[in-house]
Image 1 (tube, rainbow, N blue to C red):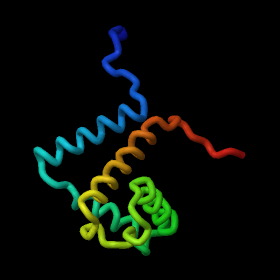
Image 2 (cartoon, helix red, strand yellow; image 1 turned 120 degrees about the vertical axis):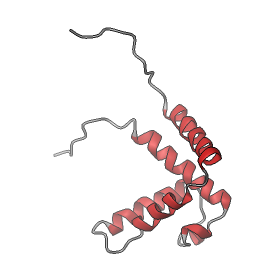
Image 3 (tube, rainbow, N blue to C red; image 1 turned 120 degrees about the horizontal axis):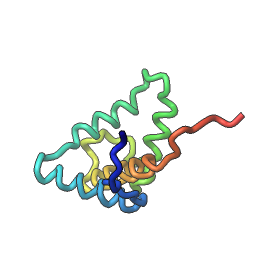
Image 4 (spheres, helix red, strand yellow; image 1 turned 45 degrees about the vertical axis):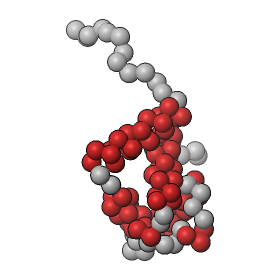
Length: 112
């Protein structure tokens, strides 16, 4: 027997998802402190030359920096040397990607 009820979720646009993710990131920083270490570890992992997908990881990281509007001259810096504004822009760009990816079609197939 199935339970029939009104849906507890509502579909959100990419913009609404982005606003929500950025708001949650602000709340986390206010109540649980700075989580930049996780972002720095993520950046370092994508820069790891031993990874078999290093070239693709570098392209993905470049896309994140581009979306965050971090100048090309500053993209090679260690993550901890980025300015506060650049860090905020990177987190907002990563949240934007998360919001958009959540709307991807569920069963992607390669074209023949």
